[in-house]
Length: 326
Image (cartoon, rainbow, N blue to C red; front, side, top):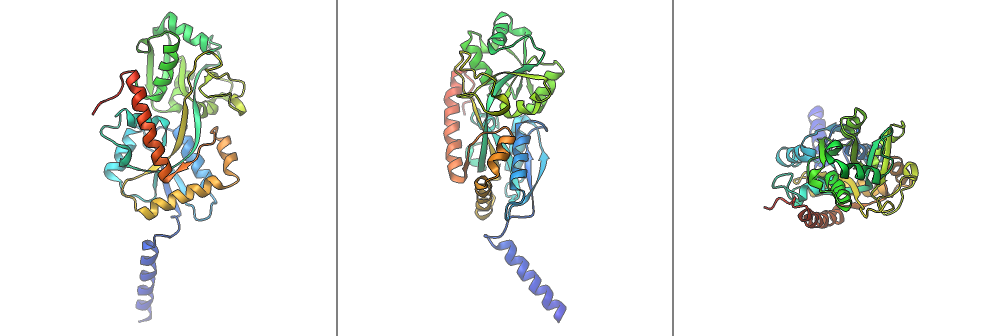
């Protein structure tokens, strides 16, 4: 009878542990990256992985990759097949929110997923190879003005993506019809910079955090950052677009979401885990090393921010006649 009593006791304890809404985080969890390695999405999950490591009760994040459709494949995989996975996070950026607003995820809606945390931001930037003849944003835009067909621009996504809109805004201010520019659609920042190093494209419209991954070797020249003021650190000497006469500012938030049917208790545990992570004294240093700048919203506050952003993107998209009306 003692063995049976032991089994019953063990099963009872196990059942309570699984059912308890206030239980600790699992030891292992997945951070799903909807792009190929090397870009800002990859960086976001790696920052979360490092920052959560060692936090009391926080899980060890395992990274996995599911590229395709600039986030659409991962979105639809979670929403249609993995809706209730309590231990799966998916990274997103401001570009993901823009694609959602433009209808590039089909009939997807903000409320189709649960927005967990945004814990950093970077900014748009324009870069060329270090041996490029273009030394400034003016140089690049003048080359585009002379003959837009001779300059291939690498971007993450297609026409209407955030990388396209950033370049389109700059071009419009320089008197260039954005529709005449030539773009190469790539899957994430890693592919963009690789394509530029191979001279498949002559310029990149991307983000500062991605640029920082490639500027150290002296192979990349950043022509402009799309921030309000010059950025600290490795890009401190790079002029803003505003300084060069082009009033374009493009912040890019970075964070994670999870499936729509995740239990409320599991969702709240993750929100608390990221609140704790961002409150730790070491996090600001880790975020800075990742090339990101302060931005912190979790849970309900983040959800409200995402909804406001989608509304703003709708207005902006109408300017370029990009909005897919439902």
